[in-house]
Length: 484
Ligand code: BG6
View (cartoon, rainbow, N blue to C red):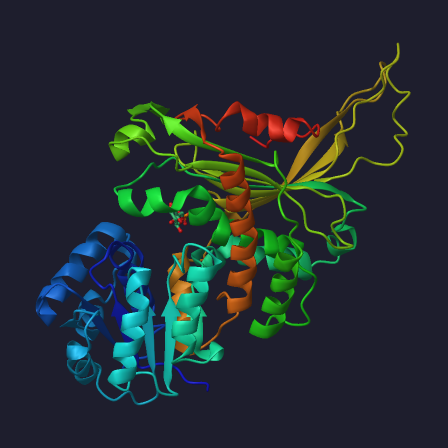
């Protein structure tokens, strides 16, 4: 059913995500007049707060996490907010919550940003209070389980109250501008698609490197690890967007149908195709930082770094490895996708250098920078200027598009702004469908099974480096160097 919600109910309203992302994104949308005037936002959480206390809480969050030039119309935004205290585990408080939400004119969007253990009881409570009707959408924030089976439990519980076309699973990477730009690059240009396959692409690298460590999320992170925290969701979504076949339109079903096919084509990872690591004390950005075990206060076998050589088993990607790596406490924060093309079949410049050798050729490389900078760069071979008495010399030069320069007037938005607006308006294209989540878990579970049977323990790496040396070897065995 198509409607623009005029009520938004935020579970976990006093939590970290709400402070850092949700309230700032909603305030920014409100300031830009992108929310309907009558949209009311009800926050709920365990703490007991009055409406005014919640508004003060929100004001403080915005002062901390929203740039001053995006805080226009703050009073109007704060006026949209109200709050209802709730113990989500018992049915008692849900009637009061429903009363606070009131009767929407068109519809209600619910955002669950709580511990997954609360998803089941929350759905029951919402059903009990009549908050799951046809004009209600449900948005779920990760983690959606810890493996396929627990993810199915969550999805079953939600499916008991909401059909799939009213369930919105967030992967905030899909809200990032350059991630969507990947689709524009591939499918709005004639240049790339004809060569986007194993005949012309040698391999693909996807790196998501972070400089941060545990950030106080001790219990959550130690139970999750890099594979489940980053690869299962964000990195596999990036991989799916690179690997998928062209959808027939930019529509939720068409795009997700193609992504899920790519995810299902992922080959089970073999022994020796993954490397895990855990950081030890070192220095990041010139500042000394403690090791993971020190931050945690105990020994642990949780990986804070993982590198994987993946394969997509279909005609398009036959024999093209996808090298994935992600880690905490890396030397810099960078998310990028690198597409390495094959060398030219024959070099006409081979005989050029007097005395032998010839001009050196390097294969073309497409670098899609997602963060911190949004830019797309294609390295092309060019002739070095000169009279070439010693023979023609060639060098790779980048053809660069810095997105912020190309679109200088455009506002840089938080990924959640786009996703929250899509939720309110009911567009599922950038949300993850159940079959995608399950294909992702299927592949991840097999990796964890492999690690279990090999009793693999993470290798240590010094904070501020690119992970254990074995990760470098994983690529170099194939003659590939990680892009740095
Ligand atoms: C989250 C992970 O999903 O993504 C965090 O749980 C990680 O561990 C974060 O830091 C990274 O997001 P971004 O947008 O900063 O790259």
